[in-house]
Image (cartoon, rainbow over all chains, first blue to last red; front, side):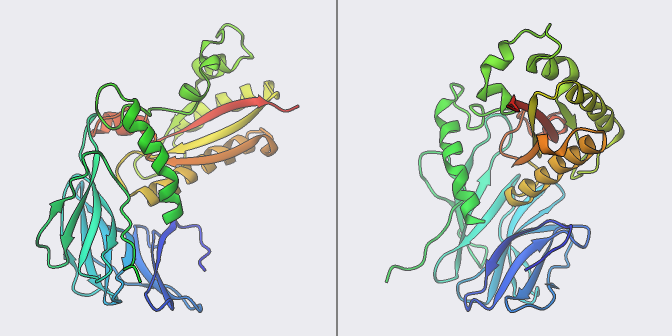
Length: 151
Length: 169
């Protein structure tokens, strides 16, 4: 769907399957773009300071979760699908890879601690920014992917 | 992208159980050559046509600036040396690995590592190495050479590595 010398990666479908959201550094830094699956030019929706990566469309269709990088810190955040009302929900040395709960109200992501003993673990947070808490798995874990509700 | 994520799970599991230090990252360090092929490391460096000679005496790594895939002058100088040796030793097939430091998301760093490997590949071809001998792959930030969360480690991890594999038969 895209063809350019830039890094275009981390695509995610909207729940109706008619649009994708992805990250691209075509502007010179990593930003978030949406585009219709049927074609047409990508539209940039992120304009804040820092770099935006790994956007994921909410199963409800109302929000896009993303990883944001700036000043040596990483955050998980959400914004409306037009890029407005950006909110950051977490911040640490390295947070990345958000995934949505099926009801579109909780986000899980991986947090990695720094240094030689650094390890990733999973955290969840409500889209209000409350209830940030680790998932106690007893071992390192990364790349969470929250499945749909079972029929 | 999810497929790529899943592909890394076995690597992570391996890292978790092979590290005697108890840290998460220690079990899977460095370039492929250092753990895929111990025989190559034991090889005699005094043979100027050997893999060991290429790795230790010529130097098979070049380093990149932060978030950059364009070759700097020292990277070009390193690749000039590599190209001369590779042209003189046409029996090897070459894989160029691209790597990134941990500053950045997994997906972005996979792409950045790929770009770094491509930069090195294009430069070697421009210096006369046959493109038919060259392949690239990217590990993104998954295989750091040095583990610490500071620039002294990051600088070593932003690299491309020129690996020699079995000869053209």
